[in-house]
Image 1 (cartoon, helix red, strand yellow):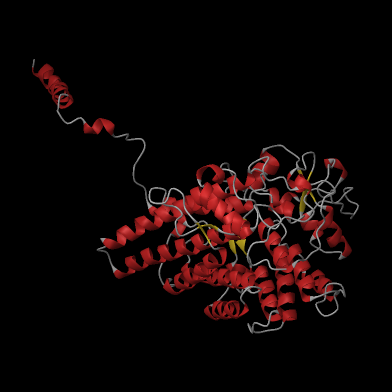
Image 2 (cartoon, rainbow, N blue to C red):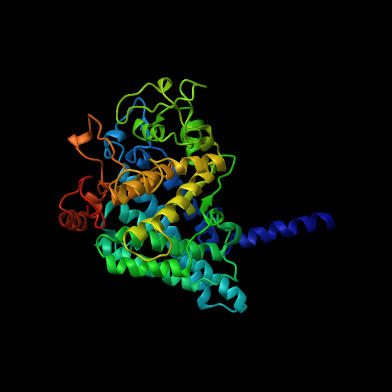
Length: 489
């Protein structure tokens, strides 16, 4: 009897508990937590941000096509500038606002709340401050992509659907200047002697010193973009950024190394290998230029056609192509672990060369920065030192003897160096108006020039019509040939 009585005790206890008047716990889903950590949100946002700039899925990212580094095979609509068939602007917009910026904001809100009740050591407090600064840097980066894509976008009223369900569109130039200020403040706030996100940071592993350089480099990029509309302001900001310390080594370039197993592989692996589709080819616009220069990066960028011939042949841009009749994309970028890229040292040197040509005294000469930029790109792709020297000595590559204006010299070489970085290649083209790109014989809506922006998302016509119409009216029409504010020429 004793053993039986002992067994009944827990059963009776369960019965008593189940009869309690307090049933509020039944509304709690223990498998779906209502709180999270800033680190988790930060990692998710950083990953989504890199995926969007890296992807070649035509539902999300067609910038390699706009830059005419790649072209399509049997479905050339996007190369012919059809953005609405797949609602591409909507997806680009949604990724940055919902998956990136919103998560950064929530992560920052959590960290600010932690600071309000913080009782730890001064060293721990610095870690929180560094985390907030890094979030501010990547928030600025993400907004700069949106502005450079669309023009005016929601900014001061964005990300708060309760208070601002229909956010206004802020002036793009005003946003730019605020982003530059935020980057300056974040760079100043970073304590390079303290940690931050550690392993939760997929780009720099929480290295505050490298994020400081990234912030200053992004300031330099934005300053150069804005120079044609406000040279005095751009000059001051570029000089300030360089003085504070920009990326000056490939060791500080901003990469995210992907995992070997899905779903965390490089999106190019997903789009080009795992999907088992042959939808893309190197574009003849791009390949022909590299052929003309006997550029040693050809073997790094493309396969030979025919194999073993030493010949490289690009598909016709914006037209139907047969996959097996042309060079293909190199296997290198198709590896699942191939890194995504936000900023490289090569790009910095091109920006510095451009600054010199624009009359901004960043030090050095345009030629010295140009040589450093081209060299860094060639080294990044594994070109031998002797081949680098031979290439720079060519009369059609050498900065002094190559043909054309400084815009052409820098525009063509930065376009080549920015291979596989479609968005920045397209942005460089819009700023410098080089290289000369081709318009396909057939285009969506009979567009007669290379697109200068994305059209605003179609969904905005339904959910934010009044503010959208104001932005469109200011722009002069919601078309891809309207230039954003800094694209003056």
